[in-house]
Length: 146
Ligand SMILES: [Zn+2]
Image (tube, rainbow, N blue to C red):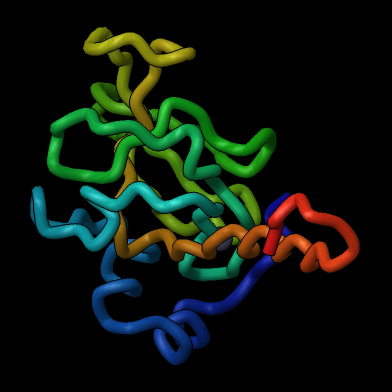
Protein backbone atom coordinates (compact mmCIF):
# COMPACT_ATOMS: atom_id res chain seq x y z
CA UNK A 1 0.00 0.00 0.00
CA UNK A 2 1.07 3.60 0.20
CA UNK A 3 0.44 3.67 -3.51
CA UNK A 4 -0.70 7.27 -3.73
CA UNK A 5 2.14 9.68 -3.18
CA UNK A 6 1.81 13.37 -3.73
CA UNK A 7 3.64 16.38 -2.45
CA UNK A 8 1.86 18.64 0.01
CA UNK A 9 1.52 21.21 -2.79
CA UNK A 10 -0.18 18.68 -5.03
CA UNK A 11 -2.57 17.77 -2.25
CA UNK A 12 -3.29 21.41 -1.60
CA UNK A 13 -4.24 21.81 -5.25
CA UNK A 14 -6.78 18.98 -5.33
CA UNK A 15 -8.27 19.19 -1.85
CA UNK A 16 -10.50 21.85 -0.37
CA UNK A 17 -8.86 23.89 2.40
CA UNK A 18 -10.89 21.95 4.96
CA UNK A 19 -9.94 18.58 3.47
CA UNK A 20 -6.31 19.62 3.34
CA UNK A 21 -6.38 20.70 6.96
CA UNK A 22 -7.88 17.42 8.16
CA UNK A 23 -6.37 14.86 5.79
CA UNK A 24 -2.86 16.28 5.53
CA UNK A 25 -2.49 18.29 8.73
CA UNK A 26 -4.42 15.90 10.95
CA UNK A 27 -7.14 18.35 11.84
CA UNK A 28 -10.49 17.45 13.38
CA UNK A 29 -13.87 18.73 12.30
CA UNK A 30 -16.07 20.22 14.98
CA UNK A 31 -18.11 17.70 16.88
CA UNK A 32 -21.60 17.17 15.51
CA UNK A 33 -20.99 19.21 12.35
CA UNK A 34 -19.91 16.44 10.00
CA UNK A 35 -21.97 15.69 6.95
CA UNK A 36 -21.99 11.95 7.66
CA UNK A 37 -22.51 12.09 11.41
CA UNK A 38 -26.18 11.10 11.11
CA UNK A 39 -26.14 9.59 7.68
CA UNK A 40 -27.14 5.98 7.15
CA UNK A 41 -27.54 5.24 3.49
CA UNK A 42 -26.27 2.09 1.88
CA UNK A 43 -22.95 2.25 0.13
CA UNK A 44 -19.26 2.62 0.64
CA UNK A 45 -17.16 5.40 2.10
CA UNK A 46 -14.05 6.19 0.09
CA UNK A 47 -11.03 8.20 1.11
CA UNK A 48 -11.73 11.84 0.23
CA UNK A 49 -8.09 12.22 -0.81
CA UNK A 50 -7.42 9.30 -3.11
CA UNK A 51 -10.77 7.54 -3.55
CA UNK A 52 -9.75 4.22 -2.00
CA UNK A 53 -12.73 2.42 -0.41
CA UNK A 54 -12.34 2.49 3.39
CA UNK A 55 -15.61 1.59 5.09
CA UNK A 56 -18.86 -0.10 4.22
CA UNK A 57 -22.07 1.54 5.36
CA UNK A 58 -22.99 -1.74 7.06
CA UNK A 59 -20.21 -1.14 9.58
CA UNK A 60 -21.38 2.35 10.47
CA UNK A 61 -23.22 2.81 13.72
CA UNK A 62 -24.63 5.56 15.84
CA UNK A 63 -22.15 6.03 18.65
CA UNK A 64 -23.55 9.39 19.68
CA UNK A 65 -20.03 10.79 19.81
CA UNK A 66 -20.60 13.54 17.26
CA UNK A 67 -18.58 12.03 14.44
CA UNK A 68 -19.23 9.19 12.01
CA UNK A 69 -18.42 5.90 13.75
CA UNK A 70 -17.55 2.55 12.22
CA UNK A 71 -16.80 -0.69 14.00
CA UNK A 72 -14.60 -2.03 11.24
CA UNK A 73 -12.68 -0.83 8.20
CA UNK A 74 -12.22 -2.68 4.93
CA UNK A 75 -9.36 -5.18 5.19
CA UNK A 76 -5.98 -3.55 4.64
CA UNK A 77 -7.48 -0.15 3.84
CA UNK A 78 -6.60 1.54 7.10
CA UNK A 79 -3.30 1.97 8.93
CA UNK A 80 -2.98 2.62 12.63
CA UNK A 81 -0.29 4.42 14.53
CA UNK A 82 -0.06 5.76 18.05
CA UNK A 83 -0.35 9.51 18.48
CA UNK A 84 2.84 11.20 19.67
CA UNK A 85 1.37 11.47 23.15
CA UNK A 86 0.67 7.72 23.13
CA UNK A 87 -2.88 8.21 24.33
CA UNK A 88 -4.81 7.68 21.13
CA UNK A 89 -4.39 5.61 18.01
CA UNK A 90 -4.53 7.51 14.78
CA UNK A 91 -6.10 5.91 11.71
CA UNK A 92 -4.98 6.83 8.22
CA UNK A 93 -5.77 5.77 4.67
CA UNK A 94 -3.29 3.02 3.84
CA UNK A 95 -3.03 4.19 0.24
CA UNK A 96 -2.35 7.91 0.63
CA UNK A 97 -1.65 8.36 4.32
CA UNK A 98 -4.54 10.79 4.72
CA UNK A 99 -5.66 11.34 8.30
CA UNK A 100 -9.09 9.85 9.00
CA UNK A 101 -9.50 10.13 12.74
CA UNK A 102 -8.82 7.85 15.68
CA UNK A 103 -9.79 4.38 16.76
CA UNK A 104 -11.05 3.80 20.28
CA UNK A 105 -12.11 0.85 22.30
CA UNK A 106 -15.87 0.73 22.27
CA UNK A 107 -17.91 -0.57 25.15
CA UNK A 108 -21.26 0.98 24.35
CA UNK A 109 -24.14 -0.68 22.64
CA UNK A 110 -23.03 -4.00 21.15
CA UNK A 111 -21.33 -3.98 17.77
CA UNK A 112 -19.54 -6.93 16.15
CA UNK A 113 -16.12 -5.62 17.23
CA UNK A 114 -15.15 -3.72 20.34
CA UNK A 115 -13.83 -0.82 18.34
CA UNK A 116 -15.07 2.57 17.32
CA UNK A 117 -13.41 4.21 14.35
CA UNK A 118 -14.10 7.88 14.90
CA UNK A 119 -13.76 9.38 11.44
CA UNK A 120 -14.00 12.94 10.15
CA UNK A 121 -16.76 13.33 7.58
CA UNK A 122 -14.38 15.55 5.65
CA UNK A 123 -11.94 12.63 5.26
CA UNK A 124 -14.43 10.35 3.55
CA UNK A 125 -16.73 10.46 0.57
CA UNK A 126 -19.87 8.40 0.39
CA UNK A 127 -20.65 6.44 -2.76
CA UNK A 128 -24.15 4.95 -2.85
CA UNK A 129 -24.62 1.29 -3.72
CA UNK A 130 -25.86 0.79 -7.25
CA UNK A 131 -29.65 0.89 -7.29
CA UNK A 132 -31.13 -2.60 -7.39
CA UNK A 133 -31.80 -3.74 -10.92
CA UNK A 134 -35.40 -3.18 -11.88
CA UNK A 135 -37.17 -6.48 -12.28
CA UNK A 136 -38.25 -7.03 -15.85
CA UNK A 137 -41.92 -6.55 -16.43
CA UNK A 138 -43.78 -9.78 -16.42
CA UNK A 139 -46.22 -9.68 -19.29
CA UNK A 140 -46.63 -13.36 -19.97
CA UNK A 141 -48.71 -14.49 -17.05
CA UNK A 142 -51.08 -13.15 -14.48
CA UNK A 143 -48.62 -12.81 -11.61
CA UNK A 144 -49.19 -9.08 -11.67
CA UNK A 145 -45.53 -8.21 -11.33
CA UNK A 146 -44.65 -4.91 -12.88
ZN1 LIG B 1 -6.48 7.89 0.70
